[in-house]
Image 1: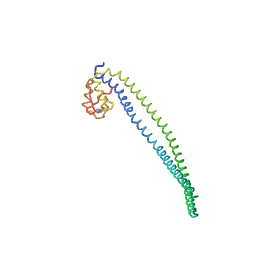
Image 2: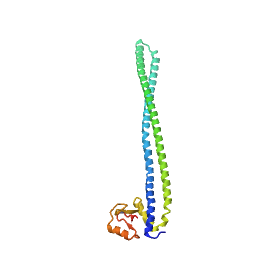
Image 3: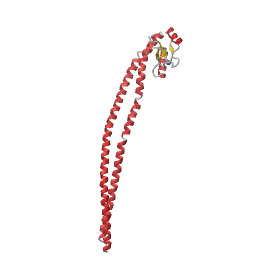
Image 4: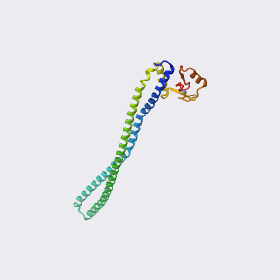
Length: 239
Ligand SMILES: [Zn+2]
């Protein structure tokens, strides 16, 4: 194990490269369930048009059926009247009923026309359902492709994370446990960056300007660990 602070810092800087990447990858990976959920929701929304077309078809079929039943009862009524017709005694009554039957038949032909119109409307709705089904099938294919890409991405990310976790094991035994714990604590609290270089007299993490005497102190005491007073990250002098 390297003993001097300078050597420990060198190890930390190397470890930070891995941990920074790990932080980034884990963040992307953590967003995956939400991305998948969003894709599922978007696809659910696309089912709405088909549902509406199917509802319209059903409603038109019900109307058609109702009209057909109506016609059926009207025809039965005419049959009844025609049977009664021969039982009538007077000519006047006969003529009146004959007129009634004629009127009822005229009404029925209107109902028949209405049924034909409803039949066309049902066919139209059926075509619309078929069209929406076809459109949804295209959407479903795209949706499945999206899910497959997301799954593959997640697998790739997972493999990269595992590889980096394995790689970091080469560095951690070279650090004093106390320092490692402290570094990891800062890492967690500071978005995956625990050790940063001093850049242009500023903290490379939060960019706050560092006082000249602070810079002097770091340069004079290379074996003392220095922390940014603002963000708490470990600072080092870039070689
Ligand atoms: Zn800082």
